[in-house]
Length: 240
Image: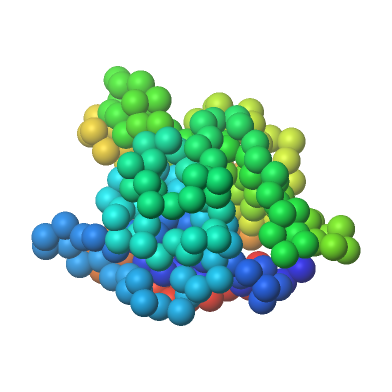
């Protein structure tokens, strides 16, 4: 099974399966005034033939009104219920609002895809409860007609947490798509996301064969991050 990953900016990406269809995550195009985040525009051909969309959370850097417009009418959507207000114009039969630990099985062009929602925790300082920023991570198991299997863990924006590891510890992980928030966390701040120490903890515990690191910040922050780790660049493609 041939999988090709392409980073489209912010936290958005697409994964092409055997050149037959794509799986996409978090289409978003709006930016705050003064931000220097770069991304491809909604007219880009990469958004064509995306038959399954995964939405991890309903926040401007992950999903917005403009992002909803690139979702084709026959696409299946897996999302948190908070995104429902932006999906009112979509066919309800194609949308599943799933919370943690829920599963769905879909069939796309002869491929069976099992989607399991994995806990993801974001936000909160040292003394706060990480559940305050409830987010979906996803674990995909993709089968083709020849019974070949690919297993992909999508972290979403999250810190390293025991509840995540309990869910995934017995799963073989072919590829982990990891959202990095910063080089090093300040545990007394109100912005707590995955840092490099947490990323290494995920890698040591889950032992994925491949790791793709997404860093959805502006160019100044990306330049600093490149000193420490290889992050995927806008428009870059990787075979996984």
